[in-house]
Image (cartoon, rainbow, N blue to C red):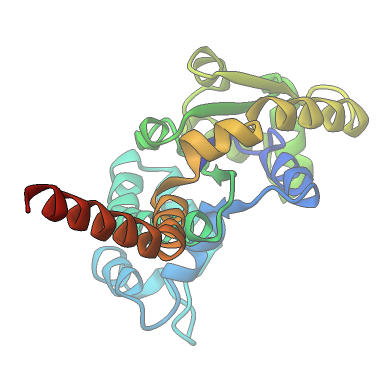
Length: 243
């Protein structure tokens, strides 16, 4: 199974690309969705966040007050690092579980949608790194419009991430989301053609132990009786010759 890493910057269009891939039946493992799940009340990450950040970043029902927590971590890199230490281990474990599930099902390619793919070093786990890019000016405008943020608040959030220009330098594939959805859809179609292994490549390189094991069991079931019979006949002949 081929693993592809999808990343970008805040408001660059990564989620749109993820949706377009999913609509074309490409399996997606979404780190953001998993991150929201692992901090639910009762989860260990939820308890760690309360321990490090206090009750003020929580709602009365025990859920995270995301706007409040966002204000804290985007203003302080050290606290942002602490939050990542609280959540990343649980997120990675869940991502690996889902990847294993797709592998068992025989998927030929799976996309890991991870905002901090490069920052966290998870790009080392994938065969192809895809970065969704747009200019910083456009990124700023989109973020302000999308989240209703002031220019200073939006800039603060963008500056908290690795610059898109640096991510582009480390990408295997760059999707330029500076124009319109039609052009982006064309790029996504081309991406799928590039990352989808051929049937032969999938069989030889990505099918993995499940296929090999099943094939071996089928071969044993089909041919073992014949092999044992042939072996028995050969032994009988050897004994007759010796006599």
